[in-house]
Structure formats: structure tokens, C-alpha cells
Amino acid sequence: MDGGAANYNPRTVEEVFRDFKGRRAGLIRALTTDVEDFYQQCDPEKENLCLYGFPSEQWEVNLPAEEVPPELPEPALGINFARDGMQEKDWLSLVAVHSDAWLLAVSFYFGARFGFDKSDRKRLFNMINDLPTIFEVVNGTAKNNPKEKSSVSNHSSTKSKANTKPPLAEEEGLDDEDEDEEDEDDEHGETLCGSCGENYASDEFWICCDICEKWFHGKCVKITPARAEHIKQYKCPSCSNKRARP
Image (cartoon, rainbow, N blue to C red):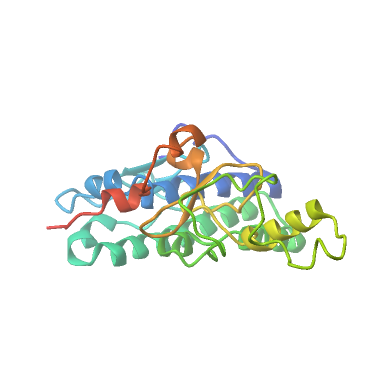
């Protein structure tokens, strides 16, 4: 039940962390950009279902593994049964929490299986802990919004900083380019993509949702800079898919 990767066994801290990030990205996609599809697949009339994330950054809703004990730790069982008995936001948060726990279980399963020592386990945990949890990403608590809000931004290092440049920079003969780069780091350094949860990078195109005010990599929501120029009000996939649930 691992998307064709059942024989894939990461053996180093770096490989386990890469496996963690891939599975995490798939789970975040299911609970954010693909949330409508995920919601529909979690039919309470079906049997016990689990949400799986794969190293390939894909996700799948499926029945649990048949073998006992399973080759890998299993995700929370029966997530579909609670769907209609809770507010959608609360249900997604519950699935996110269980998904965070499952990711840690899988990573430290690999650590135990391949004999990670104390320093390896600590290093793996610190690498994982530097990323926001799925719960934080889903609930929008994993980022600080940029100081300036606009619908579209490529956060380029050549972006005009007329409104953020310190007023004394020109008078004191400071290097404008250095000031711009410092402002850029301060302004967006804590910004995280609402889809994949990764940190801001100045060489990537980003776009902000006008509804929830979360920022996204253009590639994560399939928006190019050229297309963004013609969007008057951008709605992220989650806000576009929001509708009254029966």
C-alpha cells in the first residue's frame, strides 16, 4: 500500500528525511489543493479508509494493508466515518494531526530498522522539526503573512522596494541593493507556501489568495506569472472549492 514503492527503504538520515518530505507533500496536497477530491473519496458509506502519502509526493485514499503486521506503520483507520459528523475544517484538522503522527512513525520506523544511533535520531528529528506540521499548514498557523499584501508577487530580488527602503538610506550613501536584499529577507523569510508548506525563496514565483491571504508557489497552484497578470482576484484551490456541505 505504498504506491509502487513498497521495496523502497531509505537507509540514511538524509534519505529518510527525503522520504518524509515526499510523503508530507502528498498529504498536504490532499488536504489543501486537492481537498475537494479528497473529501469526495472519503465516503462514510465505504469501509475503513486511510489516507496515504507517498515519497513521490502523491496521495491516495484506500483500504489498509491486508498483511499483519504491515510492512510499514499504517495511517489512522476509518477517517471517512467522521467526515459528516464534524465541521469540514475540524475534520481536516483531525486528519492532519493523525497524518503528522503517521509521518513520524514511518520515519522513526526506518530509523529503528536501520540502526540509527542517538545522534542520527536527533539529527533526523531536528530536520523534521524545522518544517511546519501538516496541521499547522492546513490551519494556516505555519506562516507569518508578508508585511505588504498584494495579489501577485514574484518576490524577485530586483523588485522595487520604494516603500520598504529605509528613509535614510540615500542620505547616508548606503548600498541600495544590499538594503533591498535585507528588506526582502526580513519581509518574507517566514512565509510558507499554503500548499506544500515550504519556505519562501526569492527566485520563485509566488501568488497570494485574496480570500484567505495565504501565499502559494505558482507551480503548486499551476499559476504562471503571465497568467497571473490577467487575474483580478485570485482564489486558491481551497477557497475556490469551498461550498456548503450537506
